[in-house]
Length: 148
Image: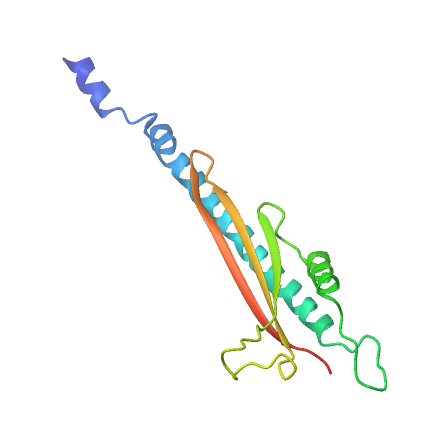
């Protein structure tokens, strides 16, 4: 009976058991913080790329006597893709939309409207080492008033 009481009072090895229980949770939290950091970096990269595309769209590329020649949509998309950073893990796509001239209403006249909307979407799957997490979807839109 005395040996059994000695084993009950012996606390050697308790720290190893506590670490074995707590370490996987700690590693999971640290890895989750890195995943969140990647999403924030992608968001900053999207904002930067959209700003660069907006800047290009506002430039007067070839000034003429009748006005300015604005960059093409493909040139703006290429600038956005070139300036993008932080989106290496997920999928990134850009769409440029122009206002639609609706013949039923007199609200929008395409000759009077000189803006475009730059839309960027980023999708990133999250991985928490032991299981797959939710998918992160980021969207940014920037309205750009064109030169001319």
